[in-house]
Image (cartoon, rainbow, N blue to C red; front, side, top):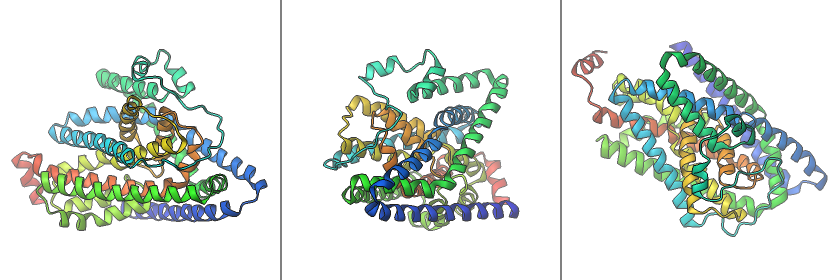
Length: 419
């Protein structure tokens, strides 16, 4: 246990160092972009393009494999009884609500309206939708491989769901295929993690090009979005998690809850990884008296599928960039984006900067210009850190509330008390 804790601390230090380096890259990129000579634009554009391609090349295998493996894991969890069932219901409902909140709030505030954004040309065309009926008719891919090649994210998602459900039905015979999916998923995560080490340079060039092309007015407008986003994070964490889930459902003190979970929340913010925060989260639940039978299942499941704040982040940015670029998004398409947002949030891995892949997929579904990626990457590190912090708070809130709602057999309670 001490060795695992030591490894976790070492990993966290590396993640924090990387986060600081990225923040320095952001600051220097903003400053350099304001005074950058014209001839440097081609250099920064080349580097930022290579960086973005390195990030996005693993989007589809990562989304497909993580969703298939996730569905298989959810199936095995449901077999454990109401503990898994309650946790799954909690995470799905809160993620759907978070997506809806992220859509309604920026729409109500008309976020991004009046902001003039000049997008750079990109090689990949955005995916467009005519109406909801055509979208539904084309959900099931006639040729799944063509969906991967053409970058049709909705068809890839549906195909992954179909394959995942089929794996549950087949049972043990699907284990070799699932092993391949797990391996591909690990490889994809490893590649994305490796690319993260050049992120300081990537965000430097991306933000420098963005500032040079759009001016400080646009950057200040993005800062305004980040402030509103963090206010939304805070309100969601306090009201939904604190008062509705912890106090209302779990009948647990809100003050005690937030004081106890502070180490896990800060660690999540510093590392931007819900998976790396699991050992600290487990210790927090132990201090709050949550039975091991609950926390040992709810916390890992939450680190895998609970992406409420990422869902809010995605909805915020989609609506903002749609307004800023003058891209019309009818309510029928908003419904499609909302569902896709929920599915992608649930399938997103609990690793730093996984939101980049999610935003890339959603921006295609929403029909946004591909140039918005460079602007999103420039603010992702700060947005993702706050999102991860809120996600971990949600995992802990679920565990505390289930302490009351999920009544364990009497012999389990006695065993837990004797430990």
